[in-house]
Amino acid sequence: MTKKRGIAAIGQIDLTDIVKPKVRNSLFSVMPESGSVGVLPGVKPTIIFNEPMLESTLNGENIILMDERGRIPSRIIATENSVTIVPEDSLKSATNYFIRFGTGLRNKTTKKKVSALDNSTVFKTL
Image (cartoon, rainbow, N blue to C red; front, side, top):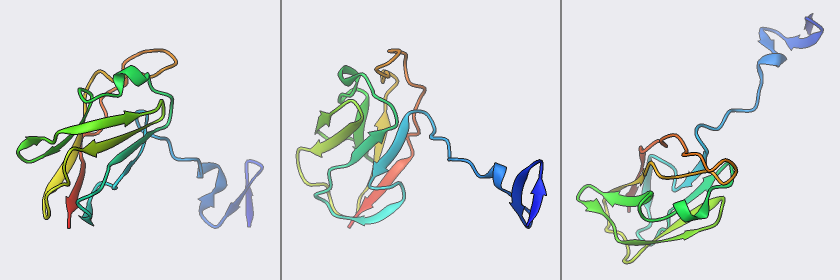
């Protein structure tokens, strides 16, 4: 083990380079994860944010479940840090779905618009 600027370093790894990953844009996680295959058709996609969101903006205009043909009729259940998308009917088998985030999402603290979130959350049902 060597010392670099008073910080212990092991081999070529400088421990000062190990930092907590930054969460991009307010979005913390989505379930099912993007790229998931074999998702059960009864899934209720869930989105977790890394900061409190203005609940009035967590709605069907800003969070949309879609397939290749368009919007899937769904109900949105929201708290300030999470959203669950509840499709009116079970999703179709062997179909690609994605979640689209609108531009009206606002955080609770500053009420500023959240920068556009990644729309590439895609999963395929069993």
